[in-house]
Image (cartoon, rainbow, N blue to C red):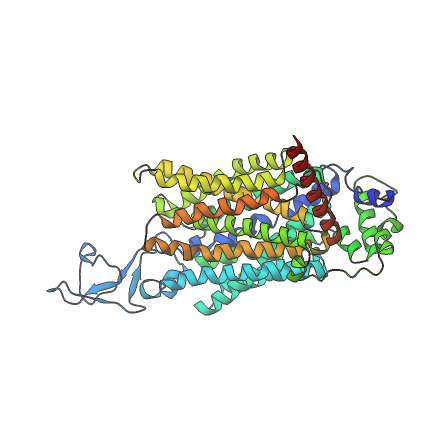
Length: 519
C-alpha cells in the first residue's frame, strides 16, 4: 500500500483525545444529546393518566362511585351502570395540571389513542433513520445535523401548540424524524473526527449524555406539570444548538470520498492549527486525491439502502447488525415503557432506571475498548436475554428482586445499543456509513414499534411476553460473533475495502480450520 495512503489514514491518529479540537468537538456534539433522548420517552409524563371518574347526574360520595371509572350509576336505587360519553369525565389534576389524556379525554373507549400517539412518534423515528442516513451520505453529516436541529425545534414547538390530537400526532411524527437523524449523524460525525484509540470512550460519553436525559426528564416534569409547557421547554433549546454546532467542520473523510479534496484539506488545516500546529496539517492535496487518481473510473455506490445489499460482505454485515439492533430495541423499550408495573412512584422509577444504566454502560465500554466491540455487543445481548428469562422464576412477592433483575437486563440492552453505534460505524465504509447506520437504526425503531404487539400476548399467557423478550436478544446476538472485529482498526472508506476485509477474514478462518484438522 502506498505510503501516502497510510499517512492520510493516520492523519488524526497521533492526536490525543484532549487535543483542543477533539475535546471541543466532543463537548459541542454531545450537548444536544442531553435533550434528544428525552423526546423518546416524554410521553411517560405528557401522556400520564390522572385518576378520573364519570360525571354523574346523581349526587354520590366518591366512595360510592362505580369501580369501573368509565361508567356511572343510572339511578340511586339501582346498581345498574351506563358508559359515560366523551367530555363527561372528571380528572384529578393535583399531580399533573394537564396532560394530553385529560385535555383530549383519551381514556375508556379512546384509550387506544394514547398508544397511537407514541406509535406515530416511533414511526417518525423509523422513517427518519433511513431518510436522514441517506441524506447525510449524499449532502454531508454536518448539513443534516443542522437541519435536524431546526426540525426538532420547529415541530416540537408546534406540537406544544397543537389545537387537536391529529395535529399533535403529525408534529410528533416530524419531530421523531428529526430526533433520529440528529442522533445517528451526531454520533457518526464524532466518530469520523476522533482517533480510533479513543472512540470507545467517546461513545460512552455520548451514550451517558443520552442516559442523563432520562434523569433530567423527571425533574423537568415535576417542575413543569403542564404538558404544553413541558413540551415547549424541551423543544426551544434546539434553536440554540445550531449556533454552536455550526463551529464543527464537515467530516474530512466524507469530503475526500465526494472528491471535494480542497475543502477536506481546508478542514484538516483548521483542525491542525487548533491543535497547535502553526504550519497546518502535513497532509497534502495530493494525498487526499491519491485514491481518486488511482481509480478515476470507479463508480461510487449510491447512498441508498440498496447499496447495503449489493455485495456479499455488505449483505452479511447489514443483516447481522439489523438483527442485533432490532432485538436490543425490541426488548429494551418493552421493559422501559412497562417499568410502572412494579407499583413504585413514576418519578422514582425513572430516576432509578436511568441511573442504573450508567455503570453497566461503562463496564461494556471497557470491554469494547480492551477485548473487542463484537464481544461487548454480543455478550450484552446474550446476558440480557438470560436475565429476562431468569426473572420468570422469581416469585411475584419479591418485587425488589424482580425490579433489580429487570433493570440489569435493561442496562445490558442499553449497553448493546451504545456499543452497537460504535461497532456499526466502524464496520460500514465512509461512502455508505450513515446509510448503514440509518438502516440498522430503522430496524431498531421497528423493534420498538413491534414491542407493544408482543406485549398483547399477555392476554393469552401472562408470562409469554417475557419469554419472547428474552429469547429474541439471545438468538440475534449469536450471529455477531462471526462478524469482523474492529478493535484498533482503521475506518474503511469504500465498499471494496469492506469486501477485501471479508475475504481476508474468510481465508484466515479456513487456514485456522485446516490447521486444527491437521492437529
